[in-house]
Image (cartoon, rainbow, N blue to C red):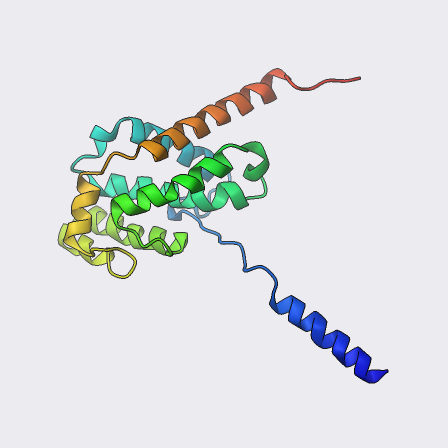
Length: 192
């Protein structure tokens, strides 16, 4: 009988070891400590605006870095966040699906964790904010970025066209607007 219990215990232990890997999480540094601001809503609205007016990003790698930080955050938070995976059903599919496009465009390793990318781009943005632009290429190090350094910084200074990402962000913004309108107007609220 005790052998059966041990076998059952080992089997359950083995099943526990096979459990799914932890869900990836990410946060944006500028939203630490802010309870009233919604980083998802802000990132969608700002990201859609930046991508539809790409010429504003030319020559401003720190702004492009802010865009990529928002995209990386959204690719993790929208499908995994407890609030957004229900409220934005299309965005939870389209934003992560566009991730390969922006990662290829900016030379970000496909297997990189979102928070690693966000942290590295925070270093890049801090270098410019502290008037140390010569230190910015060091934030874009291998194996996270390929090629690393100045060549990748040049991509951030002249961002590539990202049609799939742009479409995903425009659609996500529209989904937010529609969802907000329905909540305010009471549409889809039926009492029987």
